[in-house]
Image 1 (cartoon, rainbow, N blue to C red):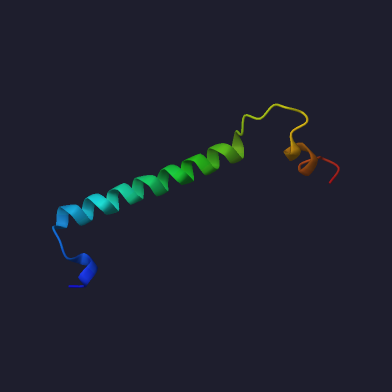
Image 2: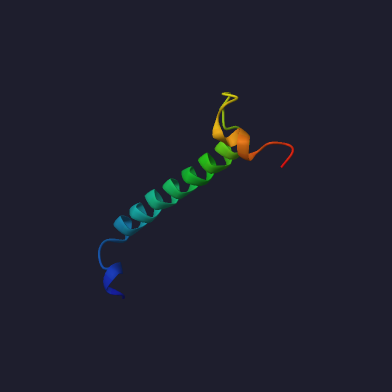
Length: 54
């Protein structure tokens, strides 16, 4: 076995599971903020970037 895989299997599975949940949460938030950002201020800088005439 590799040196980093030494230890109880349940510990490796727990760490990998937590990392997977965090990664999945990041992807969910990424798509949430892309499609429903919630910003309504008309003077927000994103509206200068996302103008329809650009």
